[in-house]
Image 1 (cartoon, rainbow, N blue to C red):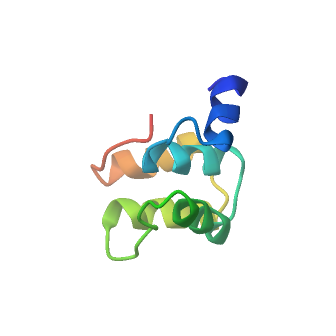
Image 2: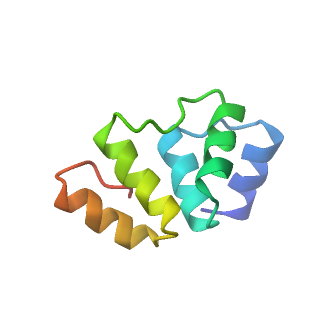
Image 3: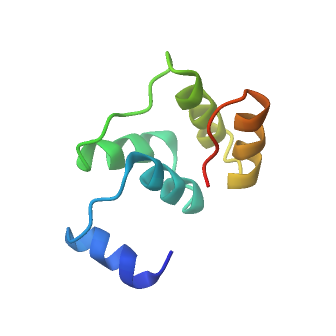
Length: 83
C-alpha cells in the first residue's frame, strides 16, 4: 500500500473497506481497542465475538500476531483470508 493512498485515506479522499482497515491495523500492530476505534471512526461495523471470522481477527489482534499467522488461522477455520 503506497504512502499516497494512506494520505488519501487520512484526508478523507478514499474510504477504505472494513477488511482493508483491519489489514492496516494488523500491519501497524494496533491493539483491539485501537482497531475498534478506527472502525467506529470510519463508520464501519466493529469486530464482533459472535462472528467466526471476526473472532479469529480479535484473537490475532490480542496476541499481536502477524498477518500470515492470522491468515493461517483463517485458512484452518475455512474462512476468507486477509489478502
